[in-house]
Length: 110
Length: 399
Ligand code: SF4
Ligand code: SF4
Image (cartoon, rainbow over all chains, first blue to last red; front, side):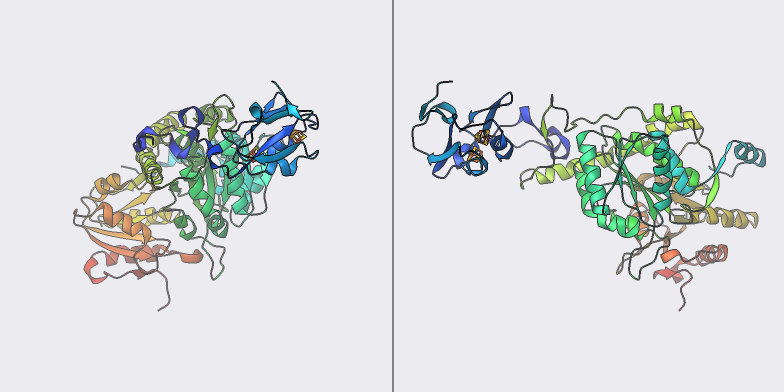
């Protein structure tokens, strides 16, 4: 728990300055499932990146990259919106490669 | 001590003046300020403000982005968005429009957005009425905005300009409402002195807020949810911002006086220094009252007037200093708080608590009801025996 600050010690108007705050690891809220991607099906449309409520979809430039599981809360929105069904939801305890990146049915090394 | 200008001063002033309504004065101020964004919805008696300003923009005399929204709720929402993003933002409204904005005015104030609003003060429904009183602005009383009530078109122009650096002062960062009486000021042409465009632009300077949302180098989250552990602290900050207003306004008023020769204070004392009886009022009626005060002074009566320009934050200390020596004070409210006394009366009573004058409270001018010099003389007459009228009095009501 952070120490509670005085009224004149915090930014005005409720503004949250990104560098000053602890980012809560929303990944801890996951209830059973997490996304994984088959990169061979991904067409880099970035719809998943746009729709993820927790900015847990990572992009590299304009290319889809993978999932930041520390922040992914497993809502499955990304799998729902993916036009090519590249994203599948798998049990949370299933072993997946880093960032959930799979290629041709196997783990994809970064 | 403020007195009327001499005849020679008046002639010199008229030579340089333009004949403009208060609405046009506010629009000229906006043209010169040239805000980035102006989201707006028309409503009587604010319409001529936005109509005149829209024409300036259409003619290329200002480069403001005017957003014609579908309601005042949307106007204020768009204003909040624009101001948060980092644009200098203004809007204008009146009466029901202000009522519809109120939810978002609270949000603008709590998000500390320096949005300047021109208000054409008008009665609230119902019954529906388009004429002046101060009920609409009183809706915003507790919202956390700075509030001015001006007396005439010149003040309407001047306060629109002064409000910009006041709102944007980094110790303040609050919305400002500049209320001009509907029709009496908005639609009445008077000689106004306009400053040079360039001088006004230099006076208001560049818009700079601490956390513009579109500054990607300094990413921020704005308007988030607050739990019981911080909500109270953020409310306390709003009071601190209000506490910073008197000094910030003094600085702005000094700079403005250096530019224009017109020095404004939160209050205006008119022939008060040796007054035994005084009236306190806001808005255009102060003009009529000065005439009556002059007449009565000529007859040897020790009467005076205190005009309150800044209603939020209320200049409690200044009011107390100005009225502390006056034995009998009548406060004239142009709005009601049903079931209690008038809102201005309550502020003045608080300011004078313990100072000992006898006080009376009058309501006048609701829904545009005229206030005549004879009514004002009657108030001064009644003030000779203030104890006889402790209850709220209604000027010009049929009873
Ligand atoms: S499941 Fe997909 S959309 Fe939902 S939080 Fe995780 S990455 Fe984002
Ligand atoms: S929505 Fe599907 S196809 Fe589009 S970028 Fe995301 S994973 Fe790739």
